[in-house]
Image (tube, rainbow, N blue to C red; front, side):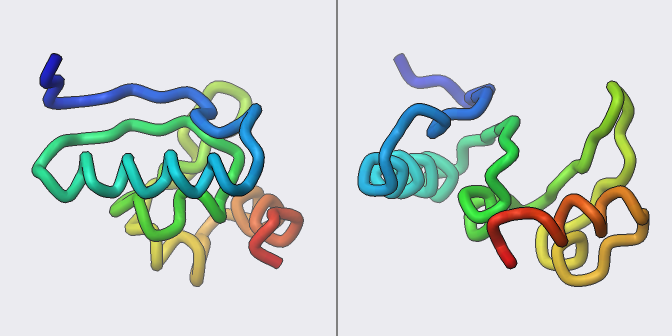
Length: 90
């Protein structure tokens, strides 16, 4: 198999921190070879450094989309700000 894109839902939810790091490294290699990833995750820490863009969703709607850096450093929506305030980044 040589997929151009992977769609992943919480790829590290049942993994310990060491295995999560292994998966993160593997996914970064996948992206660095020109492939596309779409990842659904509550783990902002896991996504930081992998994702070029983040889409923050709530109640089945997209609340905001921005580059990872902009969304994490300057979220536009109060719901995004509140989520990030309670995330594992802080």
